[in-house]
Length: 426
Image (cartoon, rainbow, N blue to C red; front, side, top):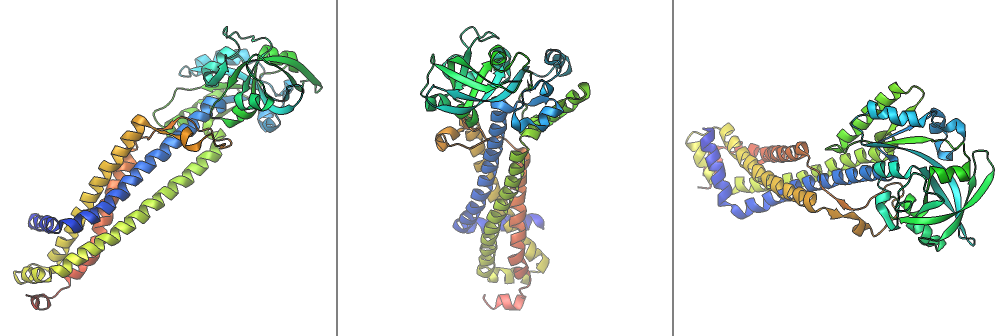
């Protein structure tokens, strides 16, 4: 009997083709946009975390508890440094064999002057070669080179400046400037440096106020006892953001166990504010699909109800031939089910097409934002959609169920029609 009812339901939907098409299109657009925008939001999250990892945060950062507590003040005293950074870097190769590289860093506050104007800068002492393997700053050189063509670990009195910082000071590659800062002994020192390169990356703090020195040059300026305050570790890029966060957290646990007295901060901990915002954003996206499905549900109720009133004579004849009220209800419920199946299948195709297009070509976020300063959130390049099979399946199933449930309301009305009342219209 179910097969007969299904064939009747399909025939009725085909008979009212325009009405069926319009109703299913609402569901198609709703499900398709939900799948597509969920993919884009996931792609934006991934691009943001990837940018944080590439331009300053790294997958994993090692430091002492004392430095972690005072990190906002950028202390550079010997008490805040790692006790044996060289041995730690060597041990990390065995402890984290899957890591791609590790690099020492020391961040400090300073002032850069063109002898007329002076601007506050965020300085970072680096090993030029190792740092280029962990971070993408060296790849963002706009003019000049990353500490000269030799790429030596010394670098001499060379500095790499953020492009916007250099522009504000009226400086370019090859120009000399004065850098002043408080030393490890807490007295003011200054020296001249030549600009070897200008860097322009999505991280606005680097482009607008960033400055990089080799450890050799930094120790000449800040003191020979300048410590390494952090070690940045690069981990391989995982297939998904959640996998990336889990791998970084697992590596942090292993490092803290192997190096007692050392804090290992995974990227998930350093980006916890953004990730909290991401979770809230996911809740709003769920709310959006509920609103879309509610609108589609109203359309389905209207479509099935119109079908009921236009087929009262047919219902009367079916009841006269012995069809039960429960079978009448099942007939119209099947119409709603097939209507939802059609709309959800269209939404699945539309959404997957959008995800595929965004994954292949991407959407240029830098052109859309036009260099807008997003603070600590570095965004640049193209957003590429990410495939979420669970979300795609959930959208399809939810659409079908919502349609079937919506159809139950007019189906119940059709099942309550009495034979005598229906046959009055024959």
